[in-house]
Image (cartoon, one colour):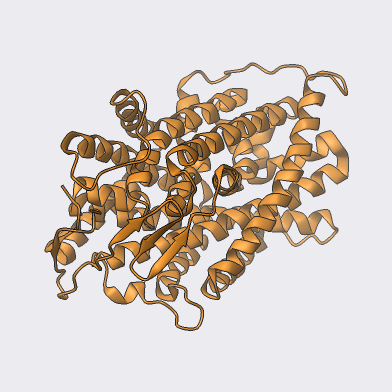
Length: 472
């Protein structure tokens, strides 16, 4: 029995949730007319997790974070990794119990009911829109710097127009087929990891004096402990991708073993790379100067260690990273809208499939349109924090949903993996996620709460009559 086997109700337009019975075997997951073969192993799961996370954050955040917390910004990234790990384990259990597209939205709507599901589903839509806009603005600045490195100086004023142009292009690419977007993603991530590995290895050896003179250490925590926590809230956007591994639970071999290992392993690997990046950056350039260099500070870090070739490698890497993150986020946003629409929380037309390309073209339009509007603002830092706010709410509620499901243990709830240390791990995951929100800027908190209240208002107007199947 699956969580789709009971419940019902209709929205204000008389539409009911689409019922899809799921049958799982060792070889495949069958949902409706679709059959997903279990072809992904542990390495495939790690590639998805690392590829989604190792994106724009590593190139855009070091300068901003060092300005806020000094060299202790490395600790901010470590705190973010710990919070992500505490949420990754409960997410693994939920994903093996409910291998469905929609990820966190699906888990919460089935564990905590339609109202919580609506707030999270619509907030996830806007959270991903904010994150995508953040990545695209970073992409625009890296594009300008790349042109400057090859002798074509166009000025920062062209960054936002470039971001708008490529945002529209990525949306169109996703409409023409998921396979095209996935090919672009895999190629970009492989090239990006190669550049980063070489650069971080050389930078760390240089900073330690193995291949050059050791750098004079800067005071580790020049602004005290509080900025370390506020910076952790800001940079948590860097870890938003780990839950994406959960969306392929139905395609993973031995999900009870491979899914939690892939999710936890990818957070650990990416967390180490983030901490190492801040160490290398603050060893090369004082944190005050890094802050003044802003979103593209890593270019000057590359120039410090490897001259013009290093700067060119970093601007090219930053271009690839922001491109990868923006493309992956547009894809994820459209799938969140698609899942919510299939549950009759949004009008059914939002989940229409393009007959030629087999992609949810309306959902992609609803993802790409708001992104382009936000890109026009150019407000990178606020956009990133609002995205973090909405995702931290999502992660905290996923932990709460796990506790609710364990407490009532419905007949269909039969995960292949169970969280060790229950209930301590999900309780700590929920508390740490909600606590990190307290250290955010007031503007980010206000905008995030406004988005959640608007989503709740939509539920009472449009979807109050819907009873999601499997909800407790």
